[in-house]
Structures are given as structure tokens and as C-alpha cells.
Image 1 (tube, rainbow, N blue to C red):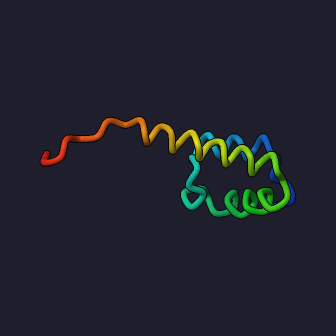
Image 2 (image 1 turned 60 degrees about the vertical axis):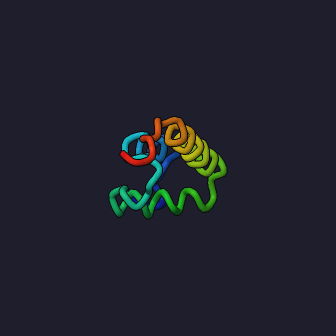
Length: 68
């Protein structure tokens, strides 16, 4: 995939498949996604929403008591 061919649908699929850490994405797709993010507010909003969801879920995890 080249940066010219990344669609929002492909970006969403990668986000759903690989998560919010773009460093974990395959290199070619990551580069194309970064290009898409540079001009697509829709892609930036999708990433921000996924990041907010991830933060919410992490904050909701139970904490182990101190000393365990």
C-alpha cells in the first residue's frame, strides 16, 4: 500500500486490528496512515477517539492493593 492509496476505511481497519500504537503497525501501512493523518481530519478524529477509549479502559482496570 502506498500513501496515495490509503483510504479512511483502510485506516479504520488498521486501527481496529493493530490498535492505537502506530509503531506496532506494519511499516508500509504506518507510513501511509501517517500521510493520511496529515490531511484527513476524519482520520485524526478516529485516532483521537480510539486513544480516548483506550485511556478510559485503562483507567477502569482494577488496581492491585499496595503491598501485593
